[in-house]
Image 1 (cartoon, helix red, strand yellow):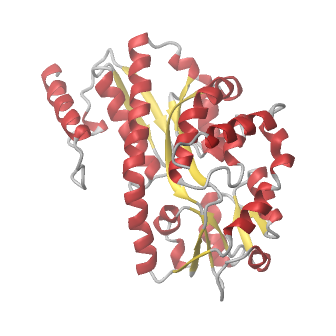
Image 2: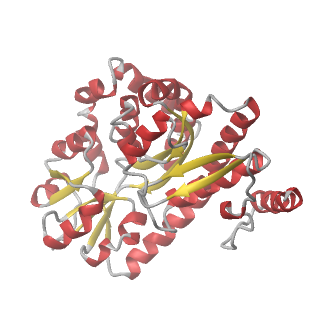
Amino acid sequence: MKMRFKKLFALSLMYLSSSAISAEPNPYDWRSVPKSGDQIVMKLGHSVNMEWSSQTVALKRFAELVSVYSNNQIRAEIYPGAQLGGEREMVQQARQGVLQGTIPAVNNLAALAPSLNVLVLPYLSTSTDESNYLLDNITPTLNPRVIKEAGVRIVGWENTGWRAFFYKSDSPITKPEDLAKLKMRVPPNPIMLGTYKAWGGNPTPIAWKELYSALQQGVVEGGDNPVTDVIGMKFHEVINHMTRFHYTILTHPIVVSERWFQKLSPQHQEAVLRAGKETTDYVRWWQPLDEANWWKQAEDAGVTITTIENEAEWMEKARATWPQHYEKIGPDGEELAGTALSILASYPNK
């Protein structure tokens, strides 16, 4: 078994160090990790059940790298498709140490770790590189708070892409007034709901799993999500428009149970942290390429794609809501928002 693992380890390093990873299958898959009785089992859960999902890609890569860097002493078991519950339920299981890790949307984790609402503030960053820079530099500040609030530790990040409007309409959304004529599904996050109201929209909180039928039946006429989700979930069958803009990027922190993490040896802790960091780097390379492909699929499916007019107007209305949301971040919400802005002000490519 050790010889087999060494071969897999060598293959994995060759694969991971390649500058042209292309579409070839990964020779080191988390399912191929040899099993032994003395391994630490790391149960990971997530809410989607599609191979194309960037959450799936990220969690599989994380599982593989943890096995590699722990010398096969930690073996992952992945439970997709909300088998273990919804995203909030899985975080609660991780707090208790029943589940070792998960990858929730940041706006869902914020329900248990309010400090993360700072990342939900609309138009906090306006480019993917800016967003990545912010996450890298604010995570050391956020992590102690998230551990205290939710009992989980952030070890890496995944982003699915910028949320875009998708909807069924005779005309495109290009300015805030256009939202008033549509019923739009919004995640049940108070900051996101408040943003829509500031634009004059009609936000309707609906569970993700109920959204397709809600669109089909006309309960809502649209919503906002990255193109990956819109086309991957076949929403293009019941909508005809998408509008691109940059009000928020959908990020998913890779989190592990703090209770479990503290029981690991220093060597195993380092393996988990290294795996999280390298998973983040991998997803940041892979995701933009993947997202471009999904936009091409949207176009091929006959979806009319537009870009909003005068994004500065949208930004002004959205950012004007920040003060009413500081308390949702915490008693020092304004200070934490200021920390985020200070980090972004130091972004070298601004």
